[in-house]
Structure formats: structure tokens, C-alpha cells
Length: 154
Image (cartoon, rainbow, N blue to C red; front, side):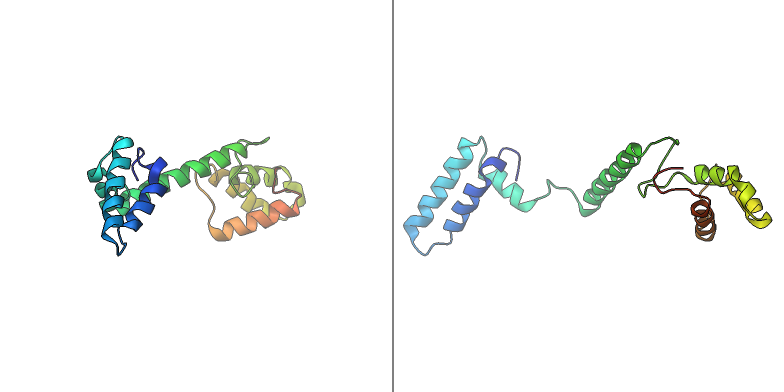
């Protein structure tokens, strides 16, 4: 309902239900009370009809979806912003950014084999510009945890 009708929505619903009575007197009384209540709220029957016809304020499903997606994205950014710790960035799952994970592994590279050290060095430079592939992420994360990295920070 429109903002001016929201405070009286429950009473309006009761009066609309009374319109289904099998007694003519109750129907007329409910109709008159409905009009009086709308006038008292600074509205009229046309505004009520508009709300019934366009319950979302006239927004299309696509517009509502865009609003939802924008709100969701803003919420994710807010949560990610609160995850800042000693590093520059933590994602919503609590892990540091891929670049930080790769740098941590690179700094502890003396405990890695040659193939892992080469991989970590490549990831340290690549993750500056893009996220690793799923396979690379799995391997990098396993190295990170094996070297003592933690979910809540390095």
C-alpha cells in the first residue's frame, strides 16, 4: 500500500472483507466506512484501487530484480569492507585476497618443492590482475593452509 495507507492497512483489509457480507446494510456501512477511513488518511478510493492494480508501485519484475541485485551487491561490499584486517582485503568467506595468499606462500617458499615454488611465484604475479582458475585456486589454497595460513588472516 502507499505510504499514507500503510498505517491503516489492517483496518482497510477488514472493511474490504466486510463487503462480502450477505446483508446489504453491512455492505453499505462497510463501503461508507472505507471511504471515510481513506479520507481521514488523506487519500481516496482511487489511490486504493491504484495500489491493488499496481502493488509494487508500478515496478516491473525486471526493475525489482535490479533493485534486489543492487542491494545484495551493496551488502556484500559492506560485509567485505568489515573483513579488513591486517591485510588489504578479505572476502566474505574470511580468506585474504588471492594476491595476499600467494605472497604469504611466496614468503614461506623455502618449505616448498621446486614445482610448488614456481607455481606460487606465477600466482603472486598473476593474482595482481585476476583471480586464479578453479584448479589453481584449489592448489594455492592447499599450499597456503599447509604453510600455516589461516582463514581469518595470514
